[in-house]
Length: 615
Ligand SMILES: Nc1ncnc2c1ncn2[C@@H]1O[C@H](COP(=O)(O)OP(=O)(O)OP(=O)(O)O)[C@@H](O)[C@H]1O
Image (cartoon, rainbow, N blue to C red; front, side):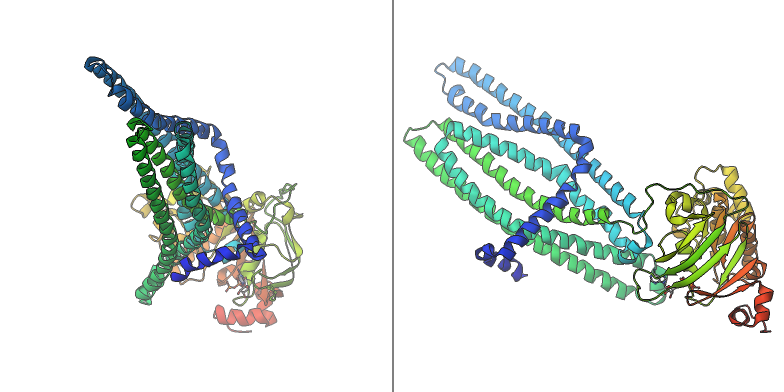
């Protein structure tokens, strides 16, 4: 877009504007903050970094020694009086040149290996840290951040950082060492040319810094657009059957390509900015070199310097100016990484609103289940602060009791589970497990004592054995099989092509709904928690599957406290107590018979849902 290049140039005269200065400072600060976020990741490898530096300096010194050896060859080797001596001297000089070349080769290889290793290592650590952090975030985080976006951050953003740590950074350092080395050599051999070259360098560096600000912003924007495309792809790829059944393939493909086009457009702007910079630097460098060569040849012809001296000066000047050119390029890359790092740091800085106590209390054990006490709960989801999802909610459950939660859709039944697991904290009131407030417990202890069988059974892309073992990773094969038997899953698992070792496909696509549920129930039974939360599925199971799933659930409820969001008549009838919820409140409670006799909401729901006649 024309405005991007035009908008930079007129900014210069306004630089004195305090708002502009403040913006520039904030920008530089953001850049520093983003990059300093890398330091903790580099720290463990400081000795490798030191080794890389040594290799780098050695390689740079070898490069710098090359013009010296060349000068020796030209001025001494070639101009010796005796032809025999000349041959000897030539051989020595060529040997010296070869030595320099070999040193350059070896040290460059060592530097390359060490630095690339660092890049890969630091990126892997960064990826792990971001993933480790994100996976601990509360559901609230995922309400605003799409999974595809997180994936893109973990993959593409870290790859940008990798380019810098594993390559640009070392290129930058090498160029700095070489640039300074060449400068020192130039000062020693030709101070006048040196001053002139320095002047030209200033001309090259200043616009680089100027362009850099925009490059970083555009880099961030470009990474954001790439993340948008990932977010769309992740969402749609998880729902391909729905997309196809609504024949929305074209629509979805277009939505994706629009997002990709936006990503391309931002990348194009960023690249054009950098291309402008490169054009400027190369032209300036060429002009400087040609001018230096012209001056040099004049000096040789006038006999003021030797041909070897000129050759040496020209090589140093090329080295120095090309170092600056590389540095400008590296600077662009570093800014790009700062853009990517900025977002990664934001992810790493996000704190879950569900805080763990500094001094957690131990969860006391109670025989036969967990005693639950929900007192005066008042809760609204953070994204809907005006709507109370639960209000004045009081519920006490004795150890071993089976309590069914029923009520119309949206009454807040699942919300009770969310609060029990402490995915959210209630604004008022308390939840106690065996007398201890859940906020005083370690999240690991709290959730470790609860088994959840969600409505949508989650099956991971691994074998049946591993899927069930997820409930207790240290369980033996026999224990897994016992849990599968208890959950009525053993039969169908054995009939799978490779029995317990059968790969179940991503999200368990190779299983039926009822089979997935039984895997999920077996997993919870293997965990053997004192408190079980069951969210019964209403999905259309055939009568046979329904019967086995029901049997599996009943087996799971033995010897523990169970809270079940009940949809099945059988569950409701067998529950010790039924809690009827409406608009986030308990409106009735009792047994099936009591509530049916009462003729209230439950009786109406039962008549509708369970096809019962109203009393
Ligand atoms: N993450 C969320 N953010 C905002 N509101 C939410 C969120 N999750 C649920 N709600 C709202 O809270 C209310 C209670 O939802 P909940 O899922 O607890 O109902 P439910 O009784 O389990 O319903 P169903 O039987 O349909 O599953 C609903 O109005 C729902 O729209």
